[in-house]
Image 1 (spheres, rainbow, N blue to C red):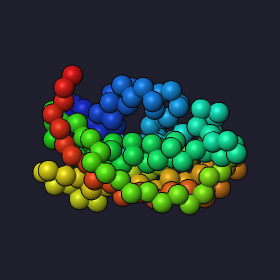
Image 2: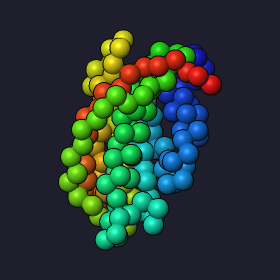
Image 3: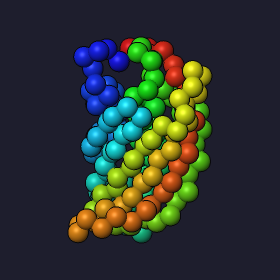
Image 4: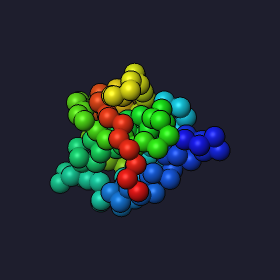
Length: 144
């Protein structure tokens, strides 16, 4: 991160290059050092056959939220890639949107450990937990 580039700017610039996230309509809500919050609106692009949010969309949102939290602490000139994650799905609901909060647990030189919580926000603002994830990421040099 350059001195003039905030964590929010760094994440927003990277997110602009995320084809899948753009296709799904994911929005960056906040980004600060060690934490990122993303939102995914309900749409037919993100649902499974019963009309609820698809587990793949929930997992992708959690992965990206944790990954971008890691990016906020990665050294300048580095990106991050996911090495592995473990996710528990708690609910698959319809309507509203999903919000994923990614948080850095430990930032090392070789790996960064994050967690993410995904919640469903209904049309009245009620929040219901949907998934929890733990993730390991690795800093890698930018290639673009």
